Length: 64
Image (tube, rainbow, N blue to C red; front, top):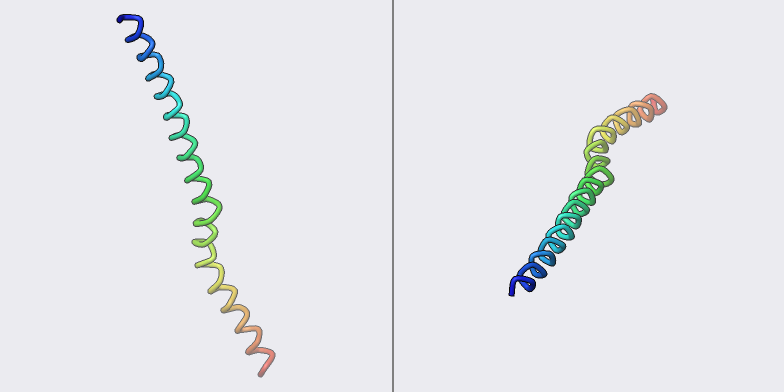
């Protein structure tokens, strides 16, 4: 009976290690997604209005 308990304990420990590795992988995948997708969107929120302002100023100077 004691050997079965020890075997189960080892299997549970192996599952725990595997779950922790998976959790860590998913955490870094989320961070990479934020950096690769959300951060450029935030930057675009500031860059696009500036670009449009300069573009319309250039167009207006050509028209006049």
